Image (tube, rainbow over all chains, first blue to last red; front, top):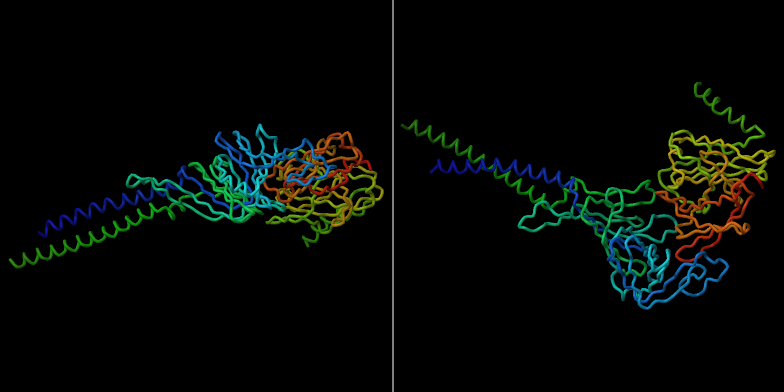
Length: 307
Length: 235
């Protein structure tokens, strides 16, 4: 009875002695590969007064409904009067449109700014239908009636800070999400590897190998009449968040590394927990084995002495 | 003692220059330059009228020269150098001899950071040489050359348009010259100036011209600002 007991405990100990270093190796490998993983997505959520997008793909259309189109003149007419309309008539020719659908071709761009009256001013370039620097004005009520404006392309939230800047990121946050290498139970686990906040006045964009990368996102109105809410999500890749600050001599790039991965990955935390249980159990088994072996030896000696 | 001899060797040529009657001399003492770690943004709109030579990052001290009109003779002018990121600024007054005949003058520029200046790319530096003492300039500005021949081929007017969408430059007294649409600076950090206007070649080396700057911001025409540009030795 005692021998079979000892055998079971001993084999358990051996199994654990094998499992523990293997598990440690798995944790180490996943930390290292997590650090150099190239399939992460950045999510940025910001409250901003403006942003600019260079559209890519053929699926960018905003049904704006009622809008005022300010088409630029060849040259400003300085000697003329401004006029009382929404556009400065020394620079633009205004026209009203009751059912405007803005279809952005691949490569065209738009700068969207929230105006003082809560409406939108969209300045477009690279479109065949409108000349470059055409301003499209949408009243706030019309904008709310339109709903969300979705885009795909290279997006920059906020402008480079400087006196007079009107394109200002007011507040925001970012997350880096990654699919875990361990799909336990057949499901893909999405993990937040790194997160943080964006400060007022920063300029945020998502880049890949130094250049702005394609993101998808949407623009919606904010409860604050002077701003809009923007969410952008990057496609999976070796992406980084580029942040421009005032006083900085270059754009800072935020990219998670193995330290973030080791600290934040729930899978790793779970693995580390399992590993520590294994180590604890192993320790217990080895102590039990050596104790039983000792007791066994003592009883054998006692028996021999008894004979 | 060694320091004393060194000071004599360094300072003597400066005193000698100050005494001279035919060369432009540096008045500011000490030489006023600020190299800071954080950007400061000035409210001045006009930041420079510059002709850049070829860009060479050789670390050698930069050479500045300015075409000073004869009419400025006997007075002082203020030379202001700012980097686009606002981290380098220098503002110094120079004396022009009363016998000045008009022409190019090489400026004494004893910078403490020649390497840093030499590393600035043409779009990253603005230099203005304006008539009058620093803080009391008259709105007349002369073209300054940086690291180049003193014959201007291209001259740029650098301004801080405070993030205007568009900026136009008009020469109302020169009907043959079309108005100029300025471009946004290509510098990575645009803290001290953000717009560059290219002066038409026909005006270079000519008589002084009045230029009117018109910024357009948020779709609205802004306030016009006029400045007199000295693009040659005349005037």
